[in-house]
Image (cartoon, rainbow, N blue to C red):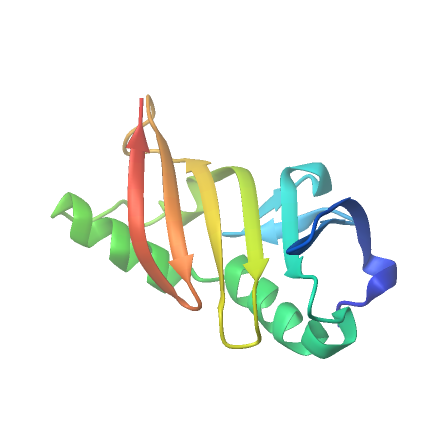
Length: 135
């Protein structure tokens, strides 16, 4: 369970408090350095209020292989190699909780089918909504 001890505050403004996890996080099965994972929580929320939801969301982001693979496959219009998900290298993750019902993430990563590009997924709750291909 996520609590205040597992998050280190690095920023705060009128709308959000920014945290880095105290330890590396798994995102898409990749162990991401804590400094490259930013978690923004509305200043109207307490960590204790969203601890369970944030823990569940981080668990989902760590292992959403089926969702990521299906989304990428549909965008490319072709099957992906069996080990595609395991080749992902996550560069950054930004997770935002505005309310318990309004949360999402932006994950930036490299992968094996388009090795000269960086991919950015925009995720609304548990659905990959959009992607951006850079490179």
